[in-house]
Length: 224
Length: 224
Image (cartoon, rainbow over all chains, first blue to last red; front, side, top):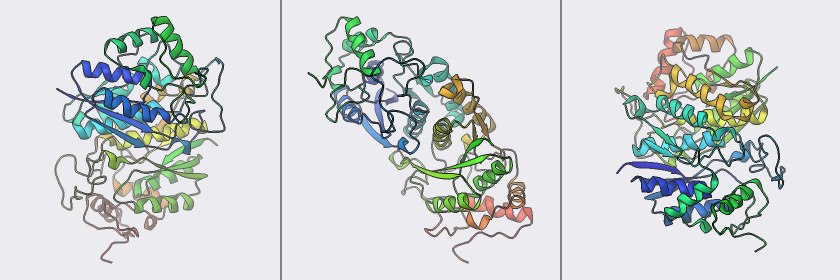
């Protein structure tokens, strides 16, 4: 059994990734990041998911990205779009995945783990640059020059098992692996108790995924 | 005038780098990281250096790496070595430069800056993997896939102007550019008021640098 660091936001994708890592036989160490996100309810969800899926341990790192702002998720003055937009949306958080993967790399090295799992997806996604296959590969290459472990010959692998899956397939895979999606929070402006708005980009992609998978959407919406 | 993010730890190298960036005509935005380092006095030094060298602004991001530990700088139970050691020393902080560069990348993107400066050095250094030229290049490659700016054609450059300089040359360069090294704190176990131990790896490299440069060592040592 090898140790894996799983970046667990508390959303649908990362919960599925954790189930995949577990199914592949890894000891899962769940890493969540409190970056001052508007939808902090996802951190509560992450805790529940980590427990439900049997993480060996979950840790939460605080890194306050509201210091920089520049995104609807880290600056209260920028509203979350409630209609489809063109280009990279305002919910893009500058360098977020790079920061999170870097933190995962730190923990991996301390744990002597060589495997990092992340739930990025480049099919039903918002067009974020740091969700693309080339980016993930470039991070992995960099990681293998960055660490003591790498110098000593232990190759770091960044696993992104959902990269090329449509949302519906992710959902089907997760259900097969026992993920309870009711627990997860994807909404960019979820209420404190994790209820979803139903109209942001993330809610739209999620709902369409359940519909396309032919699965009842278990999301707890505000209006429900 | 272009905007540059300068990673400013408060030590000798990063102070020199900020002077170099300024001399090259950049508007300097100083970024310091409070990662729970044992030598938190360097953060006070960073503030003084940022002011002295005319940073447009300085920001401090908190990211608590004591959550992971694994280094003499982030785990109180691991002592800072006071004798030369072989291999990568215990003061190596897993993924530290990757985390710091990622934070700099976030701020660069928000500021629409394309230039990041870091004071890594691969000559008189402690053998840290994340101070090597190949690593810096790999980070830059990754950064140019990670961001919205990169997608829109703005190339990010990671400048490491001290990479190939011996410590004595760094000191001579800094003095020429008006850096007051008395302000800087390099010691891994500096006291709260910034006084240096004189025996850790960082103190040894620094002192040897002043000696080799033929410059009186302005460091405030504990015993002085």
